[in-house]
Amino acid sequence: MRKYEIEKNVPTLEEYKYLCESVGWTDYMNFEVAETSLRNSIHCVTVKVQNHIVGMGRIVGDGAIYFYIQDIMVHPDHQKNGIGKEIMNQLVEYLDTHAPDKSFIGLFASRGKENFYEKYHFKNYSPNMTGMFTIIEKNS
Image 1 (tube, helix red, strand yellow):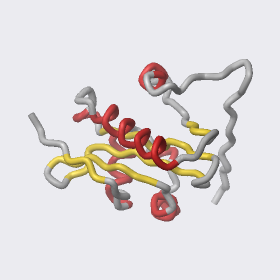
Image 2 (cartoon, one colour):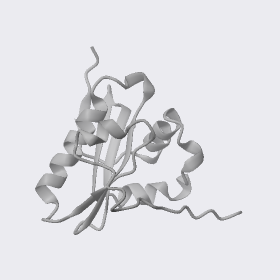
Image 3 (tube, rainbow, N blue to C red):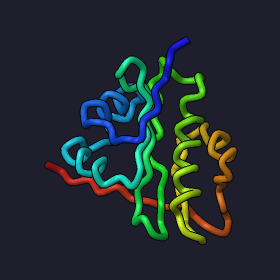
């Protein structure tokens, strides 16, 4: 059994790239600005084995009304070991302690992972609300 170390810190850009690659997100990330994004996180949790990152999750937002759970990633070699659950537990605990009354907590779930987040009381509010987003794509 591996010993997982849970830390409340921001991953390095290299660690972030490694996890994104491991879960197939490389084509969807702009790593030129990722370090600034990571640094601007409200709260971040990393999971390591022998000082090697295997998982992470973070909270972004304005720190007052709007909070978003973002970048929940667990390396495929370490999935199904409760790491994602522990990351979510840590993030939800932070929100329970620091987010004020009537805060909006959002997240986007990868297809097939909805049930995991429903355990934390996240749900699709359709037809009352529609989750929408856009992505800016600039041709270089």
